[in-house]
Length: 205
Image (tube, rainbow, N blue to C red; front, side, top):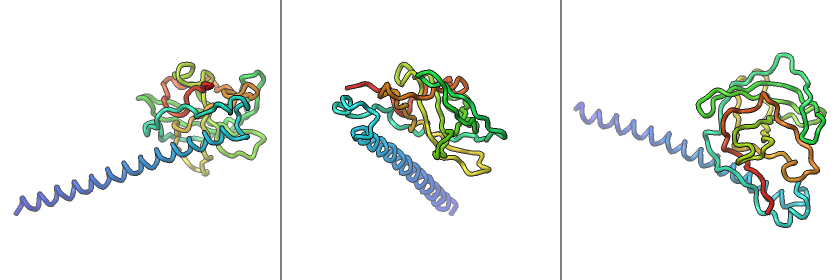
């Protein structure tokens, strides 16, 4: 009698494991499909008249270059807002500075080590998303030498956990057109790891 009961228990346990694995795979597949759709939409926008590309470059533009989406680069981070956010002057690649509000800090694990990034709010704009300029070890090799950006929704008050999705890391417009000026990621946001996620270097075709 004990053996049939044990077999039923094992079968039930395997069924539960299969269900959760199936849900996980489906969720990951839906996530990757969403990332790919966003990239397709961005490629389409780069072919339009609102593209940051110069007209001559738009005529030959095919697509931007990306890393394959990876779930490991969608990380959970401890989130802490500064008690007294301060406005800092962030250097621009063309010289001069622009004001940004040093708003919060995100701490997370990536590539087996703890990392942190400072999150900023743009000043004199209605955009409420948090701006995350960062650099990493791929810069100048596989990605733009000046670093990349991320934008994340501003969390509700009292939030202590957020998601940083490096698969959505993008190049500043100055990569595509020298008429644009873009912020230079601060030293505090230099990650000591290779972030092989998001947008790669741009090459004219």
